[in-house]
Length: 244
Image (cartoon, rainbow, N blue to C red; front, side, top):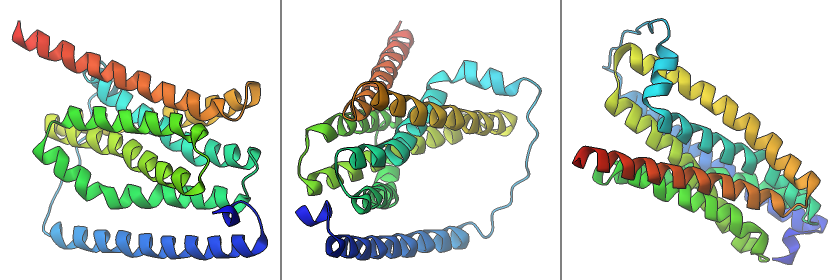
């Protein structure tokens, strides 16, 4: 795998592999889009206007859902923007940094049917907790891996796990809310994604500048694991409240 790090011939082969991955992803996404159009062609919806203050009411009523989106955005943007910089600073080629982003995105798309099945058959918050745990641990594992193949595999797990947080949040939102509250929840998710994205790119980059490149993924992993611990505490507290 040494050819992944340097050498024009290796870079050429790597870009060829990246193009194949992108073509496969494009075919997959196009297929999903086509099936979505076919299955929803008879659907009819009427948009509702959210009441004044509904956004803040939703945030107060479902803080963990908003935090799930913030955690997803933090992990997603940290992986897309900061991790390629991390690779280049450690001496990997720019081509390897680019292919890592492709590897991050492709399993994300491929894993969604499995995530959807798990959400239907198991606990939705349980899936979210496992996703947060996998995403956080995959960040922390990156600095300790020396094989390029292992790094790319870990990147694929990272992408699928972090995006699953967003899938879980959307599923719970659609299950529990309707009408203007659903509209407010969608707006809150958009705001949460913006906040998480800004925090992910700026904070991880700052940590790498102040300390060392390896501190970046370690910090990102700790943030995601801290959110996961908070989610576990929230779920346990909710169950204890229902039992009492």
